[in-house]
Length: 563
Image 1 (tube, rainbow, N blue to C red):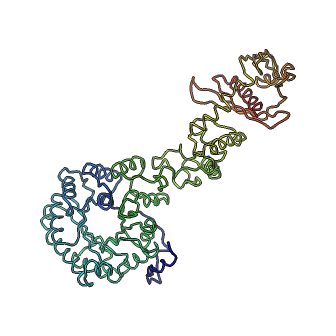
Image 2 (cartoon, one colour; image 1 turned 90 degrees about the vertical axis):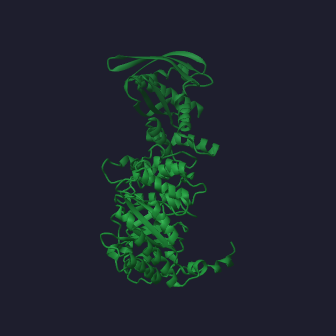
Image 3 (spheres, rainbow, N blue to C red; image 1 turned 180 degrees about the vertical axis):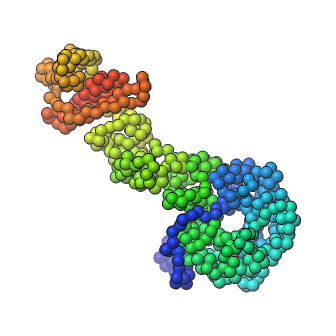
């Protein structure tokens, strides 16, 4: 990109709105929603959906809770026409759902579209023509009066020719879009919308929908909000008008433009699931709806099983939801960073049932949208000690003492560094098992252990193999662990040539059960401190809690020998 080429672009003109109100407003309710997946989204696919796929997608949109669904462009192709007919003839449209069809302001297309709607109960007839100076100049070769005439003639025809449909029991509402609204002079956008409304004659009971689209995103979101507030404040029939939004995402700010335009007074949002659509796509209705949800506003749409919705979407559209896509992406509830993992783990532990959601770095409870807690913390070379402990606890039930986190964390980080990739939970478990639970034979191995109580003390007898030689040892202490520690002070061990048994003391001990019922095992974590050298943790597991503790001491000693 050459610096000089920037001169070919012009800044988008601001809207003169000195007393704008939207910056001081707060969203308090959800808008009306209209899915355009089956039309705007479908027409943007390299391989459009089949009729069967569109039927499955339509049924999913109904389950989510959409009451207005744009099902296609029936005058554009026979497939689109047949799909609309099939929905109607097979009675697939719930009585509280309106189907919406798109139609250009052309006489033959209006006629064909009306034919597709015979027998429908609730219909939104969406007419559009383009209005911007560039469209008027390059596409239509018309001045403003000619563009207005295109719109009003189509509305007049629709109003006249829809009578048989209405008389047969169809409720038909009009939606009109000045298609290139965002780049149209506001005064002219208002003029053509008023002209259409004058012909249709809406009432507060039967409102017209005026859709003001960001057909191509040219400006920052605040400019769009100004445009919407400017229009809302000047429409003569505002009480008989639903102001609708339809933002595309060319600048990557479609969600922001929509949210600010709702603050500016809009009533309705058209968009697609996961932002499918031409070029960079439409506004993502999943994101807009769940953004409201995280502010305590019921969006009126059910995304409680986002994984199932994503599966149908990806299969029918042959598109993939990116891993960093808000709410639905594979990695959006995942932390690799050590500091993030630590903050998540601590705030999650403090979260109380019924209390306001307050988990750091996770703005929504994943369970509310059907996401699993298991993948929240994942391990790579950037992960911290707390993250490793979290995975072992959440995935496998091991509650490592906090003092042990640093030790196991270093082992995992070293492996992740060496591999240069993310480690799966199973790989983390394998390191833990190999380093602690299975570390029971070199150079120290426990072959047998038995303890008995003698008054206030405990006596133990153990058979061990130490550095290749077998020993019978005994010891007395205030419990089995203390007795075994004393037994290991046998002079034959401590004065053994080559690998002597070190003098050590126990610094920390904890244990818990793993699983439930008769098959449950006990897990012990024991930290020892040799007279020379650093402290080391060991871990032991056994169905007998006493043996789990003894195996923990053996594990710690073997880790000390291994250094």
